[in-house]
Length: 253
Image 1 (cartoon, rainbow, N blue to C red):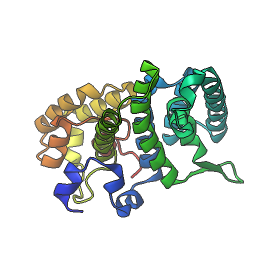
Image 2: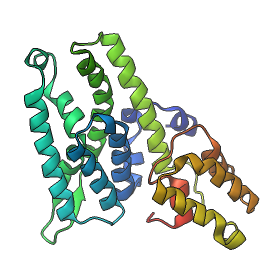
Image 3: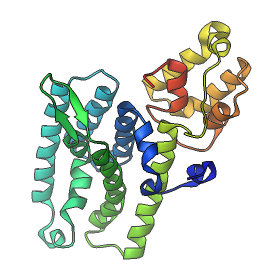
């Protein structure tokens, strides 16, 4: 894959294995969480709580025990959701699609294996499956809302559109593997650490609409790195784990 193909790729399955191998566990987990958040409006409250727990766990703010408790609650939501689905619609709906709607968050945690000392280890292949399921859920939700199957072409368009968004989120979290970008200490220290304070406020408050303003502050502080500035000011989405925010905040590599 060339750098140009990396920037334009709209299908998670087309990203080569080294892309996933290079990413940290935290990055992969936060990417999966970002995909889950995309379908938050489709999830039961218990599943949404599981997404929150998974995000906190990725940032070291939740224990493995909390993670598993949240997963169990989301699985219960899945069972309830299937039982309440109109019987006439069940025959048109694949179980995996139902799981994507009601249990995407629990899938994220099902990828985790508890080890003897209480640590949790994630299977990256399963985390990729979560993102793909989230894309399918968008299309499946359209069927549920109409209480009938939608045309195959419409289904494919919805899934394709969501996977393109997911590819954008992946680039936001993983960063560009073709560039080795470092933060300029002088820029970080400029004006009593203004850029760092802005980055922390954006991350903690989930105020990702302010990322372009962060780009302005970085440039004013002397940043001339086009990769950083264009990422801040570009049209792409941002989420927890955004590589520029991590770079400024000194998040785990």
